[in-house]
Amino acid sequence: MYRHTQTGKVTIAVLLGTAVLVSWILAFTHTPALLGLILGGFLAVGFLFGSLTTEVNHEHFRFWFGPGVIRRTYPLSEIETCQPVTNPWWYGWGIHWTPDGWLYNVAGLRAVQLQLRGGRRLRVGTDEPEELCRWIRTRKGSV
Image (tube, rainbow, N blue to C red; front, top):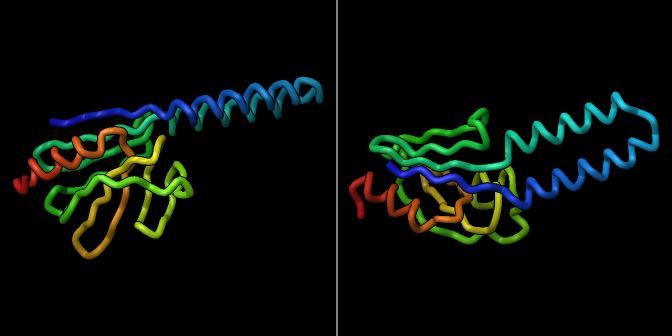
């Protein structure tokens, strides 16, 4: 079984930096309730989206952000092709639609592009795209 977790270090750093800045600004406006709400939001986003784990077993390809509240599972039989790709910088990070299908990314520009049955495509960010595709292909029996 293959399992790899990529940490979104820049995402976490930006969230922490923004939280510190907002805290500093709100400290001077005397709004502790708003401060708590905003800091709680930053912590929740960092917790939910601070990493992306990919996993391949004998039947499925799975990936999830952070603790797994946001996750996707695809049977290997539904995956027609897998190829390492480099996303354009403007695709960014997070979960959103791109011209190449849905993107799930926590850091960097590298990803795997999956072509699914029925013509659907998606990209999943990883700092090990060649290794991830090799595992998917091997498990599908199409080395």
